[in-house]
Length: 314
Ligand SMILES: [Zn+2]
Image (tube, rainbow, N blue to C red; front, side, top):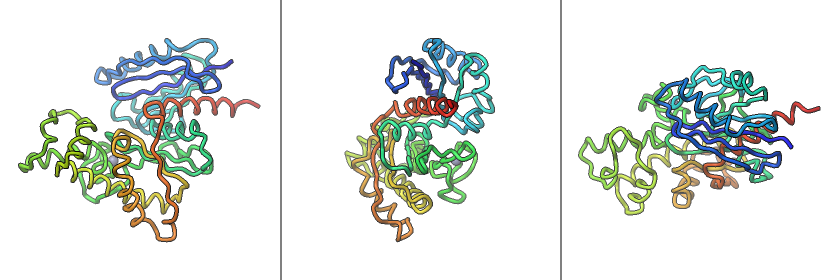
C-alpha cells in the first residue's frame, strides 16, 4: 500500500505527516523552523523531517509553503522562510526519487477542508485571516491556482495609497484586515495617547495573541472594538467583490482571527458582504467555519500529492 508525506513549512514550525492511501494519518513529526538561521539550516531541517517519515512505500510528497508558488514546483516569493526563488520540488525529487508537489499554504488548507469534508459544492472560496489574509479557490470541482499564485486575497487593493504591505505594495487588504495591519493601527493609536487594555499585552517587536484581542473585545474595550470593526469592514468589502466575481456556492472561513471571532462577527460580515455585492447575486450567500484547524494544510498537501500520482496512472 502506497504512503504519502505531507509537510507544512511554516514560519515557526515544520510539521510533517505520513498518510496511507485512504488519508489515514499514520505518523506526525514537528520541529522548529529556525527561519532566522538562513536557507541551508531550514532546508536541512526540512530534510530531517522528511527522513524521519520516509520509507520505500512513500509514493509522492506534498509540501505547503506560505508564499507564491509557480507550477507546483518553484517557490517564487516567501517572506517568512528563506526559500525565495528556490526550485524546491526539483531538489527534493532528485534526493528522494518520488514526485514532489508544492502548494501555497492557504490554497491547500481550503483544498484539504473541501476534500476531507466531502462537500457537494464544486465552487468554494476560502478566506483565512491570521497574521495575513490568505485565500483558496475551488472552481468547477478543482483547486484553482491559475499560473500558480492565484487567490492572494490579502493582496487585493483595499485602499489606494494606504499602508505599506509586506509584499511591497501599498494599501493591500491585509494591511487593514489581518493581524499585521491591526498591530500597525494599535501602535499608531498608542502613540496618540489612546488608552486600551490591549497595550498591557503588547510586546514591542512581537505579534499580539488573538486571544488577547478577543478578551479585550469581549470586555468592550473601545480600541479592540474599533480594530475589529475596521478589519471586518475591509474583509466584507473584499468578500462582496469576490462574491460578485466568482458567485461561489460556499465561503469557508479559517485562520486564527476567524476561528476565534466567527460566531460573533458572522452576521455583521454577512451584511457588509451583501451591501458590496451586485444585487442579483445577493441571494443565498452561505458561510461556514473551517473545522480541520491546523491540520487543514497538511490534509490538502496529502490530497495534492495523491491526486498528482493518480493522474499519472493509466
Ligand atoms: Zn500586499
